[in-house]
Image (cartoon, rainbow, N blue to C red; front, side, top):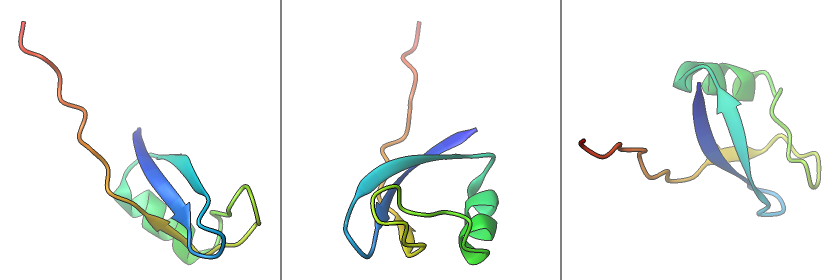
Length: 57
């Protein structure tokens, strides 16, 4: 699973989305299955995400 930080292009509400991979996000976005929890718009885009890098032991 991968977590994307998403933002609504309509109301600028920021939220997270969990997807199997990047292509799953693109597929769901194309089919308008991702909606803003604030205004229900399907105009969603990904924002920059810092990678989760583990520490060396």
